[in-house]
Length: 474
Picture (cartoon, rainbow, N blue to C red):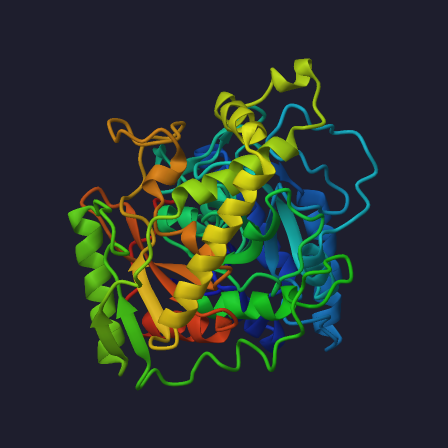
């Protein structure tokens, strides 16, 4: 990654940490950085269809205000002047939140920010635009009836993953170093794996969420960034309290940035290549993840290959997820239902048939899974798995051709279990396959061990484990 601030277009390749250092030193301004990012955003949109809206005029106005604050030595916060994008599931003042659905209305006042957006705005972030999502964020790829298909930055014929696929593509292509995504079953980690970026799902409640998700306590808000250091920077901002989320956690002790450089010596790491059930992991994926795990050992971690002793909870997850989807569309009339993504309509119909007892049985499975993982983490600080068993497949499809899967959960077995347990989990790149497509590694910690997950990821970046070729210039 370049750190050369000239020509101006190269500013789009800088991390948020590098940008703010440059602002403080007077090397370049938020206006210059924002102009560079807006140029990339237009190109990224043309290449991958990753935006629902690019807010060029608003972003430049915010950048000019930021530049004045930096000139006077009074930045508003740690991300003042940093270009940011927001997944179009989250409320952002001044812009409609359409959620990929033809049933959403573009008319309205739009005068409220989601908590994470509000904290970034208070810190002086520059909002570049909103990014694409499948309809209501329901699946692990990004295409919707309203905005079409979002392609992969490495090959637009392939999927960016989802449901935060637009955010992942935007970050990968330099359309802002920071993005807000949501994750209910892997939705920041799946596209991070496919697009070669970093993403972090913190412990549930660490980042306040409003309005409450219909998917309940499966749903998290998380940073999608170039590296772990930027994610820690962003998390320090967005985990600020907000009374609108009654389930938020107490403030974190210290900052996540301050914990990044602690050593990994003696860290107990469990490496599970397939979580202990029959997951067919592509050979190139398995080899890349294993090599990266070796770097953890070289950094002083004590690594053991062992499975956590859990069974695939997919049916319980389906009960929770499909019920949530049914709740999302419950208010729609027949004409509106006819506009839905057919796959979404299918799972909504199934979700509406579950009984309260079915739902409570799924909650029982979830609690047992959490207890098993809690016991496991009493012996191991971190669990390492592939993020996905495959790399990006054909864009516009919910499942890979010929896979035999019927729903997106069939090819995402490593992500949704840790939404059920509310544990922190991150995805970082660890290589590319023979087609040049990124491969992701997942780090999972015990509940509340957010700083530890970020520290291990940061160490892997420092050891070169996450160095992969950049995508083709948009």
